[in-house]
Amino acid sequence: HRKSGSKGYRKAGRHKHGWSYVIRYEPDYFGKKGFTSPKSLHRKENIVNLGELDEIAEKIATKKEKAKLFVDLERLGYTKLLGTGKITKPIIVKVSSYSKLAVEKIKEAGGEILAETPQESGE
Image 1: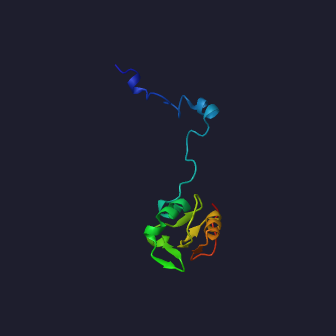
Image 2: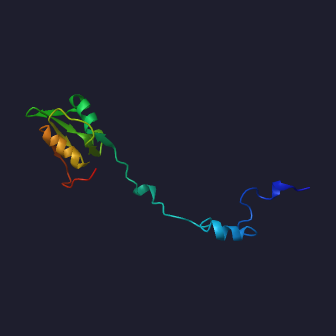
Image 3: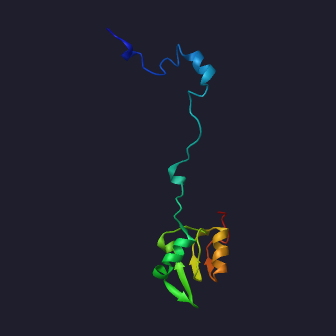
Protein backbone atom coordinates (compact mmCIF):
# COMPACT_ATOMS: atom_id res chain seq x y z
CA HIS A 1 0.00 0.00 0.00
CA ARG A 2 2.98 2.33 0.27
CA LYS A 3 4.69 3.30 -2.94
CA SER A 4 7.40 5.85 -3.74
CA GLY A 5 5.82 8.59 -1.61
CA SER A 6 7.36 7.19 1.55
CA LYS A 7 10.90 6.84 0.22
CA GLY A 8 11.94 10.47 0.63
CA TYR A 9 12.29 11.37 -3.05
CA ARG A 10 15.61 12.81 -4.25
CA LYS A 11 18.80 12.39 -2.22
CA ALA A 12 17.17 10.02 0.25
CA GLY A 13 19.37 7.50 2.01
CA ARG A 14 22.48 9.67 2.13
CA HIS A 15 23.18 8.49 5.68
CA LYS A 16 22.40 4.85 4.88
CA HIS A 17 22.40 3.05 1.55
CA GLY A 18 23.60 6.10 -0.42
CA TRP A 19 26.64 6.60 1.81
CA SER A 20 29.28 5.33 -0.64
CA TYR A 21 28.00 7.82 -3.24
CA VAL A 22 28.31 10.67 -0.74
CA ILE A 23 31.85 9.71 0.22
CA ARG A 24 32.97 9.48 -3.39
CA TYR A 25 31.16 12.31 -5.16
CA GLU A 26 29.91 14.75 -2.52
CA PRO A 27 32.22 14.62 0.52
CA ASP A 28 31.07 18.08 1.71
CA TYR A 29 27.35 17.24 1.58
CA PHE A 30 26.96 17.04 5.37
CA GLY A 31 28.13 19.53 7.98
CA LYS A 32 28.35 23.25 8.35
CA LYS A 33 30.49 25.32 6.03
CA GLY A 34 31.82 28.82 6.34
CA PHE A 35 31.19 31.58 8.81
CA THR A 36 28.40 34.12 9.11
CA SER A 37 29.23 37.21 11.07
CA PRO A 38 26.52 38.71 13.31
CA LYS A 39 24.27 41.28 11.66
CA SER A 40 24.99 43.71 14.49
CA LEU A 41 28.59 43.96 13.26
CA HIS A 42 27.64 44.75 9.65
CA ARG A 43 28.06 48.44 8.89
CA LYS A 44 25.92 49.84 6.10
CA GLU A 45 27.63 52.70 4.35
CA ASN A 46 25.51 55.28 2.59
CA ILE A 47 27.60 56.45 -0.34
CA VAL A 48 27.35 59.39 -2.68
CA ASN A 49 29.33 59.99 -5.87
CA LEU A 50 30.89 63.29 -6.91
CA GLY A 51 28.63 63.53 -9.96
CA GLU A 52 25.52 63.36 -7.76
CA LEU A 53 27.02 65.79 -5.28
CA ASP A 54 27.79 68.29 -8.05
CA GLU A 55 24.17 68.19 -9.26
CA ILE A 56 22.59 68.78 -5.85
CA ALA A 57 25.27 70.96 -4.22
CA GLU A 58 23.39 74.25 -4.73
CA LYS A 59 20.24 72.88 -3.07
CA ILE A 60 21.86 71.19 -0.07
CA ALA A 61 24.66 73.65 0.72
CA THR A 62 24.25 75.02 4.23
CA LYS A 63 26.47 78.08 3.78
CA LYS A 64 29.02 79.73 1.52
CA GLU A 65 32.61 80.34 2.56
CA LYS A 66 34.76 82.50 0.27
CA ALA A 67 32.70 81.65 -2.84
CA LYS A 68 32.82 77.95 -1.95
CA LEU A 69 29.74 75.94 -1.06
CA PHE A 70 29.82 74.08 2.26
CA VAL A 71 28.10 70.67 2.30
CA ASP A 72 27.80 68.53 5.44
CA LEU A 73 27.22 65.00 4.11
CA GLU A 74 27.22 63.47 7.60
CA ARG A 75 24.20 65.55 8.56
CA LEU A 76 22.45 64.42 5.38
CA GLY A 77 23.06 60.77 6.27
CA TYR A 78 25.93 59.94 3.91
CA THR A 79 29.01 58.21 5.29
CA LYS A 80 31.29 57.88 2.26
CA LEU A 81 32.17 60.01 -0.76
CA LEU A 82 33.31 58.25 -3.95
CA GLY A 83 35.00 59.80 -6.98
CA THR A 84 32.72 58.77 -9.86
CA GLY A 85 31.60 61.68 -12.01
CA LYS A 86 32.77 65.24 -12.62
CA ILE A 87 32.71 68.17 -10.25
CA THR A 88 32.51 71.72 -11.58
CA LYS A 89 32.07 73.86 -8.46
CA PRO A 90 34.50 74.45 -5.61
CA ILE A 91 32.90 72.68 -2.65
CA ILE A 92 33.95 72.20 0.96
CA VAL A 93 32.68 68.78 2.01
CA LYS A 94 32.40 67.35 5.52
CA VAL A 95 32.27 63.54 5.43
CA SER A 96 33.59 60.68 7.58
CA SER A 97 35.27 58.63 4.81
CA TYR A 98 36.21 59.22 1.19
CA SER A 99 38.22 57.78 -1.68
CA LYS A 100 41.53 59.04 -3.01
CA LEU A 101 40.00 59.88 -6.37
CA ALA A 102 37.30 61.99 -4.71
CA VAL A 103 39.97 64.03 -2.89
CA GLU A 104 41.93 64.60 -6.10
CA LYS A 105 38.89 65.77 -8.05
CA ILE A 106 37.65 68.08 -5.29
CA LYS A 107 41.09 69.69 -4.93
CA GLU A 108 41.33 70.16 -8.72
CA ALA A 109 37.99 72.00 -8.64
CA GLY A 110 39.28 74.26 -5.84
CA GLY A 111 37.47 72.65 -2.94
CA GLU A 112 38.52 70.67 0.12
CA ILE A 113 37.41 67.82 2.37
CA LEU A 114 36.91 68.15 6.11
CA ALA A 115 37.02 64.81 7.89
CA GLU A 116 37.17 63.68 11.49
CA THR A 117 39.54 60.86 10.57
CA PRO A 118 42.60 61.93 8.58
CA GLN A 119 42.93 58.54 6.87
CA GLU A 120 41.82 58.14 3.29
CA SER A 121 40.11 54.92 2.31
CA GLY A 122 40.82 53.30 -1.05
CA GLU A 123 38.11 53.16 -3.67
